[in-house]
Amino acid sequence: MFNRIIALLAILLCSFTGFSQLTSVLENNPRLRWQQINSNHFKIVFPKGFEGQAQRMANTLEHIRTPEAKSLGVEPRKISVILQNQTSNSNGFVSITPRRAEFFTMPSQNYNLSGNLDWLDLLATHEYRHIVQFQHANRGFNKALYYLFGANTLAALSYIAVPQWFWEGDAVATETAFTSSGRGRIPNFNLLFRTNLQEGRTFNYNKQYLRSYKHNIPDHYVLGYQMVSYLRKKLGKADVWENITRRAWNVPFAPFTFSNSIKKESGLYVKQLYAEMATALQQEWKEELKKIDLTPFEIIHDRSNKAYTDYEYPLSLPKILFLL
Ligand SMILES: [Zn+2]
Image (tube, rainbow, N blue to C red; front, side, top):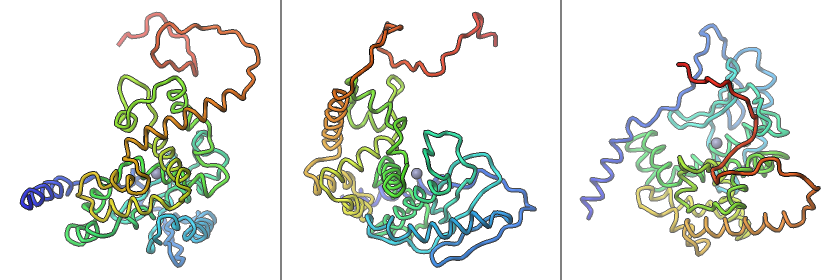
């Protein structure tokens, strides 16, 4: 048995030595002059001319540092945050290979993503939670393996031990809790999940998480946000995920620890928790719908099949479309 575990570990570690290196997609002009602001817990790196926003981010990140970390029970050590302002991509990420955060500072034009928030405030609240998650993940055997094999192994095992939906769902829940907007408050974020549930397409946990070519299923951000918030509300414990993820990251190679830990906290395995959540949300949304008085309307398009159809942005197409 012991030999088998060693063999499994060796395979895992070898196959992830080339784990994706998250690097900035941006190639900056080498003439760009970089500057930095060092606060107590953040090093903000930014191109010359961007001082105003860099100052603001240094201040914001220091401000949210302790409150946003509280429900995972760790405070991250000092980290570099690079502000990239030479691209029209609107995004951000946190990596530990090497350890840093990058904010692509051009605000998103998608109001369903940014809501009423200042773009950099959204990035700060969301990405900082990922920094906290990585700090929390660096523990137990995970930490030992980090010292032995480096950051790539730590990153790979951290992702194996805890599903992607937790990482993103927890960050979306945090951005929603710590701002006056956030995706948890934006109706479009939930639209597909809500439609599916209300039309009886609950799916099982694996299908909901891994999605499908046949059915339109929302991504792990949506599933994660619902799972993370549902369990917190159900138990009335904001920090319930601290315990669950602590156990999972302590022994990242032990299968099913994440689900077993959820069972310890809630009495339900992860699949059962999902099923219970889906039923509860179905019920909640059904009740909400009952309270709405619909104004009279005429149905102008009868559905001819059961396939998911999106009528947004209708477009008339030329008769001969495929000439290539
Ligand atoms: Zn994220």
